[in-house]
Amino acid sequence: MAIGVNKVVTLNYTLSDDKGNLIQTTKENGSFVYLSGSNQILPKLEEAIDSMIIGGRKIIELNSADAYGDYDENAIQFVKKNVFPEGSNVEPGLEYMAHNPEGHAIPFVIREVKDDDITIDFNHPLAGKNLNFDVELVDIRDATVEELQHGHAHGAGGHHH
Ligand code: ZN
Image 1 (cartoon, rainbow, N blue to C red):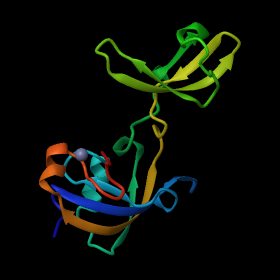
Image 2: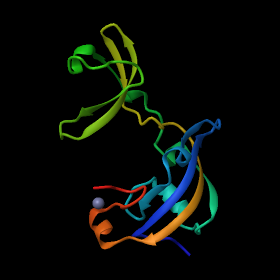
Image 3: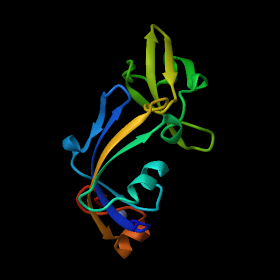
């Protein structure tokens, strides 16, 4: 038995790191919904959920390599304050978007601000972390034709247009 592709899957989950620190929980934001087989969640996570049944619960542990990769020191850069648009709020912890030459948006976080010198970090916020998911499978249903065309789930917890 497997969920397979083109299903709309509803989950409740709590995500914590190795030290038991809470990272995210659907208790705060409501159930999470995704379209299976469309790369919307981490592949190893989807693989582990694939064998779950409605009402079932599973602890899924992913090491950082199977999650958001290792923390990369080379993803740290130093810039001057003037690379930010005038009037920007430049404070540690804030997230911004840079654009690469192809025009893709790449998120980064401000790590440190010393007068004019800013340290920015392009690592994913969860890079280098082993992730522990406590997952409860709430519902599985066939995706509608419209959802398949759009490549995402609609309705509660999904996309609203
Ligand atoms: Zn849509």
